[in-house]
Image (cartoon, rainbow, N blue to C red; front, side):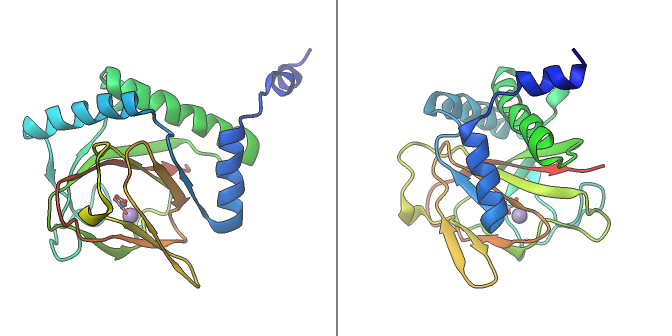
Length: 211
Ligand code: OGA
Ligand code: MN
């Protein structure tokens, strides 16, 4: 049996991932609740908080990873890039699940995702990220943006910090509920993070990239 045929026979359809793909094809974004369980979210949140309290985060910038500029009138979050090669137990859970999704996308959609980059993010009360696209003049490799929310289970809509996605005709508000992930086409959909009115808004954001 050829390796290719074996791969095909070995392929197990994943209903959740199929839904994500259907959503992306239909509307260029997908919102999935409970992508991470509340136990997984708690572990990831603890990892984020430990690093935040150890002062590992820095003021976010605009521009690419290598061409940065800080502008608080555009975004006010604090970030820490994650390194898969030195991932702690929490981050290994995160990357395992993301890698399953990436493999599935590459196998079924021929997306050719070769790289990924993820960072933790903390939006203190009063901060926001103005309407933008996730692409830069010097880097058009970002294909899909993924945001995972790590807020406490009692996160309230009144806390603000909605992600607003703008399509050609509408604006959708997505609340940053824990365990929820949002995936969207980086080069197509403009979006913004509305001002956080109470509490700290915790997340992991990242990009799946082509060559
Ligand atoms: C970003 C971003 C959205 C969110 O970091 O580029 O748009 O909901 N984040 O945190
Ligand atoms: Mn963005």
